[in-house]
Structure formats: structure tokens, C-alpha cells
Amino acid sequence: MPSTIVTLKLNGTERELIARPSTTLLSALRDTFGLTGAKRGCAQGGCGSCTVLLDGRPAVSCLIPVVTVDGCAVETVEGLADGDRLDDVQQAFVDHFATQCGFCTPGMIMSATALLNREPAPTRQDVTEAICGNVCRCTGYEPIVTAVLSAAESRRDGAAEGRHDSAAERRHDGAGERHRDAAAPLSGKAAG
Amino acid sequence: MLISVEMPDSAEAAHASLQAGAVPLGGGTHLLTRMNDEAGPDLRVVSLRKAGLRGIDVDGDTVTLGAATTLADLEDDPRLGYLAGCVRSIASPPVRTLATVAGNLFVPQPYGDLAAALLALDAELDVLGTAGLRRERLERVVADGLPEGELVTRIRFTAPAPGTFRFHKASRRRLNSGSIVTVAARLTVEDGLVGDVRLVLGGLSRRLLRAAGAERVLRGAPLTAEVVAEAAGADVIEPFDDAYASAWYRARVYPVHLRRALLGA
Image (cartoon, rainbow over all chains, first blue to last red):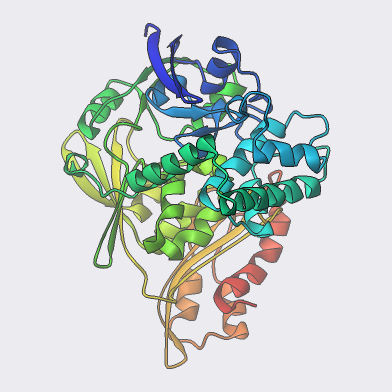
């Protein structure tokens, strides 16, 4: 099968690549687009270091043939900051020493971002469940959980003060659309 | 290595590709781990992502799941709250975004916890074969498999009455871990006695096991610790060693987890 052209809405911008059938989303991000935030750890979906948002949901990019997600929205850790200004989750990771070697951090931040986009006021249990697929061998997880809870609080405070964060709003809106899509009834065509 | 990935836009087109020798690709959470890990054979796969097989219908108490519905879709649907504990026990959010309902039916033990739940609910499958669409009981497919080239398009089951569905999974970690023992059951109790019961065990044999012996012990009996202990000894299980637990350990703790599943203590 020849290579095919794949279009992704990558961090809000439409991008194209020529992909072989075996090219994973992770390879495309790192090798084609130079977005090296997502890491190749286990390549088994077990460590979470390659986690990105796929149509607003966290997904292990190492297990996705990129041709299967043609037309999808992909968000990576590189899309979070506004220039030099870190977003709430990134800043909380800095403030709470939630990163040491840094290998897990981009995936961890994307899992946390997915959680906060869906649940603005998570419990500690919610955070633990959200990051259960992201392995960290340095921190012991406690600073990470604290950072995510702190980021949630910052976002809520920002919302209460009317602070405008267009990137965060865009993610919220997108997640809502996707949720409705997923809940749609089966089409007549699928009835077989 | 993947040498081709087809993206059909209908179940019929996907089936045609399977008939031509391609392998179905649901979420890829099983197949891609092997592709990434081994210098395996060249594979032609047919992705079901855009084949119109994703969605959830609830019509009265009949629930129909498209084969390519993701575990995350199930998790999001408040109408399927009785499955939430099961679904959230499977892998992690970034995997559940991809993993599909039909894919879970065919993963080897100690995975396939959703399949255990659907088997306890006596689910039926719509299967597209060369003779067209037919219905199969999941129990038959779990036992015998499906011929190569056939495609599961939908999974259908009757929603359990409130309080009649039990799911309990023991694993090394509370989250994101393969099963040591999984118990899924649909069970009614009337006047203190067990009425209808379907009991399915995961993690205890190479295939999901319908615990027919335990069902016979339970049916018509009071739901007490003594009866459940007797039920735990009523089936031949063939536990296995893996990285999560030894066969000995699985056999040793099965009665404990059957009790926790049925009595909550």
C-alpha cells in the first residue's frame, strides 16, 4: 500500500503529512513535525509517556496508526503554553515540583489537562484515576496529584475572576461537541 | 509490520476486506502492542474506526452497542451506569479512549473484563459472514471463536434490573492492572433465596468461564457465606501463572473474591 496524505488539526492548526501504513501518531508527531514532547517509552500503551489529546480525549499515541486518525484534532503539550506563558497545569507542575527527570511530564500533563477540561473540580480520587495510565518513576506521584488539584483551583479562580483564556475555552467547547458525537445513536447504515 | 491500513466506510466494505485476508483493527490496543514489540509478519489491517460501527442505543431495556464503540463511550454514558465499575477497572483513560467493545471480546485472559460482564448479561452478537448477518450468543463465540473473515458489528443485551448486576475484579493494583480474579454476575434474590443467576469468571482460566456449578449451588439457596463458599468449590477452574499472580494464588483467593462479589464482604 502506498503512503497516503494524512491531515491533522494539530494544536489548532491544520497540518498534513505523508504517512506509511506503519507510521504511528507518535512517530508522526516526533519525526515529521518535530514535536518531541510526547515520548516513546514502552510502546505498549502502558507507560503513558506518549499521551496526547485525540479529539479532546487522552490517548496513547504509540498505538495509533496515524492514517486511522486522518481529520482528527490532536493536541500535544507543545500546544498548551501561550508563548512563554505556561498554562495553569504546566505552571502548577513547576510550582509543586511535580517533575524531576521530565520523561513522563508531557504525558502526565496531557492526562491532567483532559481531566480538567471535563471536570473542573476534581477530587483527589479523580486525579488518581486520570493519571493511572501515566507512570512516573521519580516523584512518587504525590507532587503530581497536588499540582493537578492546584491547577484546577487556579482555573476555577481564573474563571470566577472572569479571566479570559481562549485556549482553555476552545478545549472545553471541543470536548462538549465530541461528547455529544460519541453519544449519538447508531446510524441506520450501521444496522447491517 | 503493517503493510496496509484500509479505512472502509461501512460494515459491508470492512467485511469484504476481511474476506480478502485483512485483519480487523479496532482500537489497536492489543494488535499494535504486538506490532511495536515484535518483528512479526507483515499484516494488512482494516480499521473499523470509520465503518459506522460506533454508537450506543438504549431502547427500553434493550441495549445495543456498535462494535467499534469505545470503552470511553461506555464510561461517558449515564444510561450504562451499571457497567461503570467494570469499564473503569480496565486499563487507563488513554487506553480506554481507543479500546473498543468488540476488541475486548477477543483479547486473551487475564484481560477482557468487559467481555465477562457482557457474558454475565447473556449478550448476543450481530455477526457479518459470507451468508449475511446472523445472531450469535456471545457464550458460543467465547467458547468456539469466530471463523476468520467474519465481523462482529453489534453487541446486544438486556439491561439488568437495578441491583441485580455484580462486578468485582481483584488485581495487583487498584487501577490499570490485569485481572487476578474477575467475577461478573446477574443475580436476583426473592424472599431471601437466589432466583435467576448467571455467573462468569475471568482471570481464572485461559478463557472466560461460565460457572455453571456455582450457579446450581446458588439457585434456590439463601445468599449466605456458607452457600457462597460451597459455590466456590463447584466448578473446575484451570488457573494459570502470569506476571500478575501464580495459578496457586488465583485458586487460593477465588473463594474470597466470589464472596466479595456476591455478599460485598
